[in-house]
Image 1 (cartoon, rainbow, N blue to C red):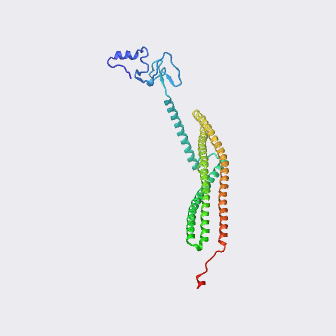
Image 2: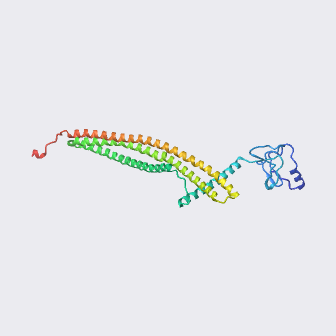
Image 3: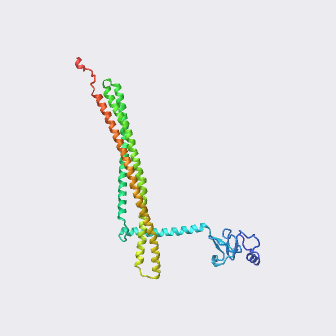
Length: 331
């Protein structure tokens, strides 16, 4: 940064006040009566002021009310604008949060009214109840699948034990063989049934934790929009009851504009939630219909095949067997 020379006061003043010839001073920092301008602030000093949306001409007063050199430009960067916008949004968000929190507390204490869409509220209550019931069914299906998995493992081990005994006991070969085949068959059928129940519980988990939960997010957004709308509505009602002074009238008009904005947001959130609930109902019916039919088919197929196998085993056991005479008969 170039400053006025301190050795020669008169020469330094003349040098700082005199315009530079050519382009030697372009892009450098200068000092004008205590106002320091860096390369980022001063871009050029043309003869005619340049008009730009992101620039402020130097005809305006600088820091401390000191005018800047004629024709110079001070750049207002996009970062400065975005920082100001972020600050304004943060202030508006803080005010809205404060009003919403106050509204919720007043509603819980019974000191403020709330907007209620009874039909939509009934749908929301049904949605919460369905989510709890479907989650309970999902947990039971997972428990059943786990227990059946353990049962099939035990049946398979029991079948292997019967098969080994059928070899070691020739006189009971048929009986042990039939029971061994039956337990192994039931074990294989149980594995297929476990897979069907696991698939059912997986689809139910997706329905509960993703599809319904996604709709509950819209419910939370709707409730937040409703609270904000009621908070600004209560402010307008209070301003309307206040004495009609000039400043009070201006505040009332400003509050009405803010209320209209939040009323539009509330109606939009309500409409979005109604559409989401309708889509959820259609998707829920379709998914549950398919999964319940598949589960029933798997259970029916497993039990019917098991019944057929048991009937065949009963026929084998009912055949007369050649039993060796008792040793008492020989004695």
